[in-house]
Length: 255
Image (cartoon, rainbow, N blue to C red; front, side, top):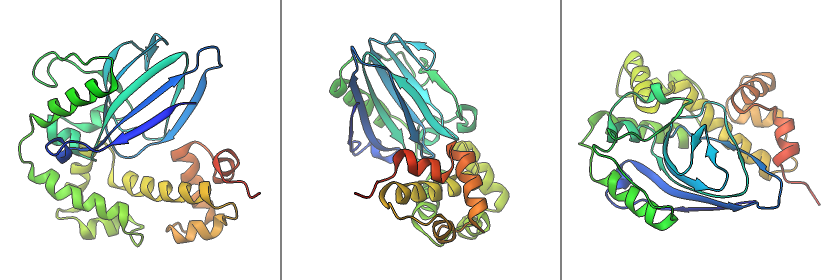
């Protein structure tokens, strides 16, 4: 239904940006397509254009800032369109531009003239828009000791399968529990518990997608839930569906 591409950020912008990405589609003479994406604890800047007229409540073409999505990012694509975006590292948007990421959580707004210090114009072309956006992001941002300390902590939450509880996150944090929570809200936009649960659910969802014989009770235990009931509840709360419903929609069917 669409073509998704990803590529590395430039050397200078990669301090803040995990990667750039684009989505293109041509659904003329076809039914609109409802897309659902399990999001990461990341903010995005996108440049969007197409024949569908408006997206996220804003007329096209437009350049938008997307805060962290706490459940599932849902959108409907139709006609012909394109999005090119920068996915920031958790905390990277605040490190580059300042402000409070929590004020953007669950929200989308157009890029204003203040974000980059002057008005910007991005061409409706994937390569040109991405190149220009990469250059703009790389041309600002001062060394940020808080972001530098936050990044390895988030990497550990993402990569260490032994971290299941917020108390364990605090054991690895360079700050007090209170300061850690304040840093997560200001830089990432969501609490540390949300980040921990989202990464565990990302990994659980991936196993559901790829293993047709998945055992949900075993999956819950391996990823640190007390029992299957708590796992199902968190899965439904954060992803809007039960593990069984998710498997029926996105899982691999054994042939």
